[in-house]
Amino acid sequence: MQTPARPVLRIPAIAAALFVAACGPSQPPGGFPGFPPGEVTTVTVAPRNLPVTYEYVGQTAGSKEVEVRARVTGILERKLYQEGAAVKAGQVLFVIDPKPLAAQAAALEADLVRAQAQKAQSDREVARLKPLAEKRAVGQKEADDAMSNAELAAASVKAAQAKLDEVKLSLGYTRVVAPISGLSSRAPKSEGSLVTANDTLLTTISQANPIWVPFSISENEQLTLNKSVSEGRLTLPKDNGFNVTVKLADGSVIPRRGKINFADTRINSSTGTFEMRAELPNADGVLKPGQFVRVSLDGAVRNNALAVPQVAVLDGPQGKFVYVADKDKDGKDIAATRPVVVGPWVVQDGVNLWVIDSGIKAGDKVITDGVSKLRPGAPIKFAAAPQSPPGAAPTPASPAPAAPAAPKS
Image (tube, rainbow, N blue to C red):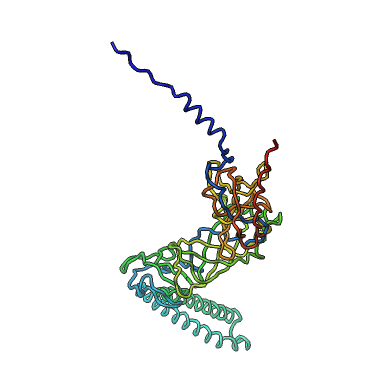
């Protein structure tokens, strides 16, 4: 029976490999063996004043919103406007059947004529009896009764005139006119429908030039803004003098600016927000009432802020971080990570910057180019001409590291 062969342990070969590895060059901390230090570009962080833009969701509304309602009860006879079209103040929109009110007006005119006739008769009676009473040809009581009858007749004329004026006013309300100029809405009631005075909605008119854009700011954000202002880190325009721009749903920006015309001082208890309202010119009618838009407020300034180019901010398992140029224990340039808390994005001189609330300090050299090849602790070398973002101090090129001294024998 043949004995199976056993594996042969090549101990001399393994030992030789380990010996070669031990005698070879050591791997730089955090770097890649056999590769030179990564070439990077840095910017030196320096405080600067940065513009701040706040953006909120708003919904457009007419600067005047009027509900057109029937002021008399009757049958809706005609609709005289095109639904959704622009209408002018005083334009007739609807006609309610005027015939019942016209008949009432005619009857009241007859009552007025009768009251006027009775008043004329009473006036003649007073004119006849007054001189006779002065001559004591008739009793004083008879003359006084004639005077009272004349006064009652005058009151009857005024009452009849008031009733006639009221019916004529209602008769005028049968022609429903636009109270303002603006964009009309649909007519919920069709011709032939019964409409009720002061109840039935006929249409809605919105004045869209200028147009209003209400939006809300959360209480927490407002408290943060107030704290930043009180600490001097933020300066807001006086009297809410923001420059307002509006961005549509497709991302396009309306090429004109508006202003804030209202800021509520009360917090909405149900939403925890308070309302502000912007006003924009809208002569071309691009903005329609009811549109959802994004409202941008420009004019605030963040004082002595620290910011870095957006390309320098990376995402890691523990959050956002940046690479900064540091020194190891031997004085060599290495890449070190700094966890950061970021603020808003800003644009200055065409450069996209990210405001850093904490994690770095003025004077730190933040790596902007070459970060894709870095690991924490990796050796680096600086490019010949480091670049700085607008307002940042330029970073001079670092001198080449000195050659290590020869070991003493």
